[in-house]
Length: 208
Image (cartoon, rainbow, N blue to C red):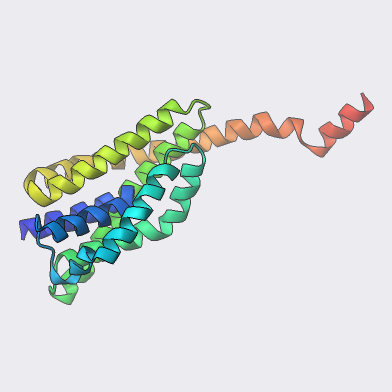
């Protein structure tokens, strides 16, 4: 049960950061015999699923390194990562009681949402800065973090669950501050941009 819980939590959490990489790693490990996924997730070991996930993982890796475009990518994937996290979490429990599967899906969607919004908020805040180095560093950290999280959830479940609790506490503290930071940054940018582009100011500049 501990292993199933860790797998469900790990796949859903990692899908909020790197969905396609998560599917690729889980499918590849199943294919290589390193792990045994429940029958409900055995399709991840299909060569077709592994191949498509690998291509999408490469695309996401590249898209995530482009400042501003990464935030657009995150916005679109809000509607993909969270449902996928719910499906992966429910599938990790195999053919459990329907009530348990429902709870797992809700918890998985919540975990995917927490990691996704923490990532998206951090990247949006970083993108308000003109230099790209922080963006690349954050993206690389997310790559490593997703890989490490997936591996720990599969092979060291107790340690992963402890680290997940720490993450959730940190995310609960950080998310409101990220929202305020992004809102404040956008407001400051709007104040700097709007005065020089309003119709009234353009009319005044013509008269001058």
